[in-house]
Image (tube, rainbow, N blue to C red):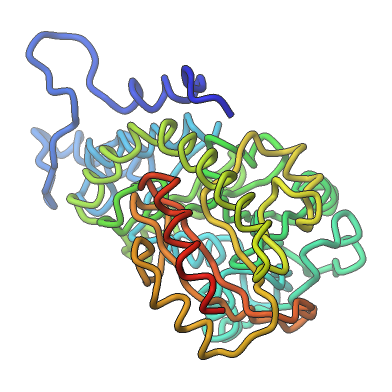
Length: 390
């Protein structure tokens, strides 16, 4: 991917979600804090109350402010969504999307490679509401049809899988689910709308952790639920009924961070490929889980459905001891040790895949890398000095 120019979505990122027209306006929407919204007449209040689920309608602070509506507008345009609802975190986006599309007695299919907190919510909370959870092989594609029952309501999946980076057949799963009246929810955090727009591929709902690339600076907790026309209202009503809402500061941080998303994604695409390619040649490495390589599961679907790759990927090292892996991680100087990813700093963390429907077949330890904005050659030098410890 060339760094010259930017994508058409780069224009949206810069110009959408801002005040237009008139002199003396601020470039960035200001932080807006408030709960009570005042009206001149009871009739005006009642009209706002009746439209309280609409983006852009001021009624009460929990339902949205001008700043949060700006943010929802940007995400709608980026995803090509009918509607978008912002929530307090990526986990909230996942859980509220599921709560808004299921009911007691439903059967929900969940990809076996999902984010650990998605699995935790399904097993510990959603199952208590009378929803049956079944995990499935994420690479099954259109054959997911064999898993459908009369009461199957939702397929929850990710692209790629959390930590293990398999790329499912998004179009095949979405097409099959739609034919059976089953809602599809996809976690699209890894690619962002810059590299993939799942709604255009037939998915019904896309969720994002804005704490990752969308915010981009590791300092804001926020989530996004982008929906088609069928799913938007029930999910938005669920969010409002639960009372979930991001803070004004988080809305401001997300609005600011989004403006540079296109440029940041282009950098991590190039830097990630350069470092992944270098790692693949090292004698300590058994496999690099990056979609640029043909042996990455679902590489063909990544090439079809995505226009780029994030800077997050996994490395399977040749069999070694846990102690050696720990020494390797601790010896890295430019890679921080911590959860999350998608900020400006490079990170490293060992990963232990949790599976119940499939088997993780790789023999060596798996380590996840997030490539940030440091000098790429310096990151490679840091890896070079630590790899002999494995």
